[in-house]
Image (tube, rainbow, N blue to C red):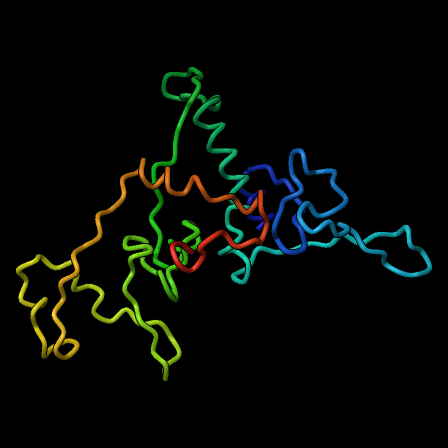
Length: 216
């Protein structure tokens, strides 16, 4: 990856990360010799003969830790996006042969469902796996299959007079769907709702209150 970025003519900066992936040694944390949350040492002795020699502990972003710790690694990107919008970057307009201060913002991203869960921080698997229904998601657990099932959850999105809502044969027997689609939150409502949660960069791996019941 380093070689690829350099071949594009872009700068490369190496940033150390905590062994559990819970924090970056960056900005005001760059000179810390202990982990911010657990207090453990950043280094460990290489051998008993020379205890002053130290080996850096490191972690690599992988599928096992990216989902819960995504905001740790996005911290760098968010910093750049904020600078791009509030400060801007000096650009050269070759057609007019003049320089200008360009400002830009990221409005949205397009992802598949697994990546959507990682980037949003709300898992799209297991219970509460719908980012639209959120805490009102209607799933059930298959005891034999040992997995969460969302069979028929789509029926609530049909119009109130849709025949599928009253169909007791083609779907779950004897059941009529009376639940209506959950009203989607506006951007302002969503912002106010997530404001009560702390960032991983502030509380490390601690689970938030009501995790698995109202949010994921």
